[in-house]
Length: 188
Image 1: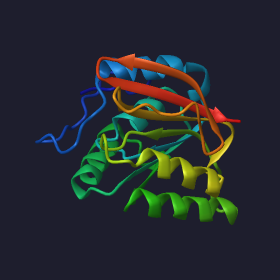
Image 2 (image 1 turned 45 degrees about the vertical axis):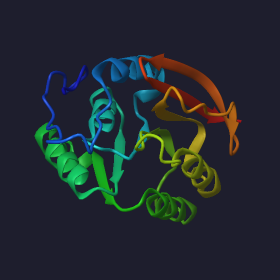
Image 3 (image 1 turned 120 degrees about the vertical axis):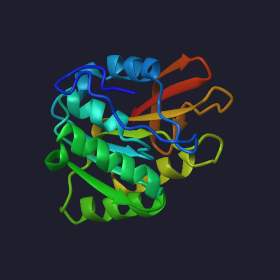
């Protein structure tokens, strides 16, 4: 696994030793960032369920200003920290540990208190078929975590059909890459 383009282009990222962490394929990652080309520069990104951190690091490589990486897995967070250190992007990032609901609640509280800005792009790549996307969308909406005009990108298996509208967000695009689907939502 590697950074595809931008200022960290070609850097190899550490990968998991087993299949408990499922990184986004280079094909799907490249397609995703082609779609997000006009939104990335200067953006604030949340890479929830960050796994190896490859999506958030790719966003930083392409000009994102700041990225929060969050995951419940200690193994994932260790990989994220190693990859951030390897790419020398620690100053542009924050790593948060914990369950996604707790993380989103904390971020929503910080945004509500004016301690954190809302995110322009939220990347959701949870373990497949665990029912985590719908609750994540609900907490994002409730906490005002997505900035006006922002985007949520949800990666899921093709068998999981996401609705056209979910908790105040509207599906703007959907792209299939083999068994993986990228559903992109924006504010209504």
